[in-house]
Amino acid sequence: MTDLPSRRLLLVHAHPDDESINNGATMARYAAEGAHVTLVTCTLGERGEVIPPELAHLTGAALGQHRRRELAAAMAELGVQDFRLLGGAGRYSDSGMMGLPDNDDPACFWQADVDEAAAHLAEVIREVRPQVLVTYDDHGGYGHPDHIQAHRVAMRAAELSAKTGWTIPKVYWNRVPRPVVEESFARLREDLPGTPFSKAAEVDDVPGVVPEERITAVVDGTAHAAAKAAAMRAHATQITVAEPYFVLSNELAQPILTTEYYELVRGERGPGARETDLFAGIEETS
Ligand SMILES: [Zn+2]
Image 1 (cartoon, protein in one colour):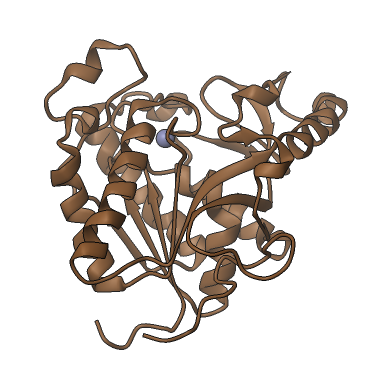
Image 2 (cartoon, rainbow, N blue to C red):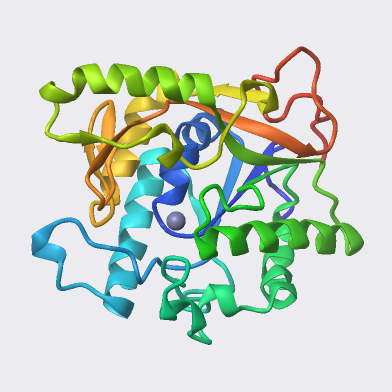
């Protein structure tokens, strides 16, 4: 690929739906601005719990195929055309929640060889040459084995590609500042009687909550709030949306954050106290 746009963003996620929940507004914004947005999803989420009763019969590979279609629909909502599955569809399967016997399945992502999985991703990096990589922290945001593994594979792939042709200038982890989450949950608890949901989640149920000072970049996606909600809604087996709130299969309401937050962990921070653009400080060259 030689004719890529000058700004290129790569996101690495564990399951279809994680990208829309964590980065939907960011993805929609950069796609709308003409940046090249690439999503690499590591598994098809074959072990996810299905919310709609009429789809409850979907399990395993059939659920994976269904979620692949949900992912495509979500990407259409966000305006993202380049979305891929790590190593090709079905290469790595969902590992299930931490501690379950599913974690021992040799086909699952948790059992994957990190170097081998990272080699697949490094190939994508060499092709797309992203200036910005977004993934989870080393705890995977909330401890799901596939999220932890996605973190390891993304960080290793960045190292591998640096040795073989492309150094990604900036690497970010998904974060949310505790005060923002606390405030939005306070609002949620007040609003709850007017929503279809009966119970709120806890602040610590939100992946990646950190003290405010850890946040280095704030991406205002307010203008793309509708696209984010629509993308989340496209993942109907996993998410029920009633804007500005949503629930997962645990039925605990959470706010949809349309401003998204990041911590820069590799590379140089752009000017200003806090970046408002993930590409800040990047020279727009090949
Ligand atoms: Zn996930």
